[in-house]
Length: 198
Length: 198
Image (cartoon, rainbow over all chains, first blue to last red):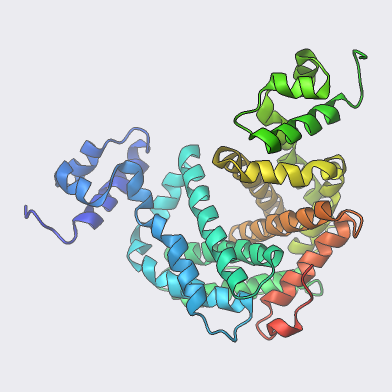
């Protein structure tokens, strides 16, 4: 096997998620992951610090990426529209995670420790988003509210996109979810007049 | 001092929050709390299991209380309106926490461990809300989205209410925040046409 394999990270991720689903996250070792992938522990260490990192690699860059994207959004956009534009922009970073997203969600749902790690990650992204909105002039209370709602829209859109990537791209999913949410919030709208559920 | 003091729990909570703010949560002991309150450790144990419980006492009842409230909401209401009615309903449970809410928030913000505990609590409430909305017929993806947005509205309304309880009651704050959010989500609305920030 070649010492340098550009697809090694992806093979390791696929092997790890398979094993996590088959045997449970707790019961899977790094050795099992590298054996399943047909790679060495040294190769594993080149891409991931430990088995948890297979699920969260790169997530420390998310808060910065999202707030940079808010800063790049057209200055004329009102806060929530700037936030949606930033979410669409950031989604491009996740294209290579699409094939693994459903397995990753299942593994995280199986472990309170991983759920907690996921919440910590999302809280850091929410705080970065809120700060970026405050820098665009939003009051603190509204900036935090919109950031929380933006993260909820992002999560929903990401799940729908990765569950059926052939049906719509990420940008379309973000706008679909935002539109659906706006309709749900309208007190005049009865449930019968809301858009169909996917 | 009387062996049974109906205000003992409140005195202990006030003493604990004062000490957490003055010396830090980590540096405060149960002994210091009881001394500050002029009460015994035995009295402390009657109301709280440990110092963390001062911040989270009763929170294990929240998921059940919120989902019961969703079930009680008028069957004709669309999902998000049922959720708002449930949040208003549940807010009545928190009236005695109003004087301590700002201090509690400051203490939690000071400690990653407490923030994590708070997120775990909110995740359990969100899951209960989503399940209650599914039972009213909402599709899983939308039920989760609306539950997440509902919790964000609740948190924002609760902060505004407890920061200025004399200005508006909790129900008015919930509807104020929901209205503000609906306006923010409207793509046609420029920031100039949105309601004033508090």
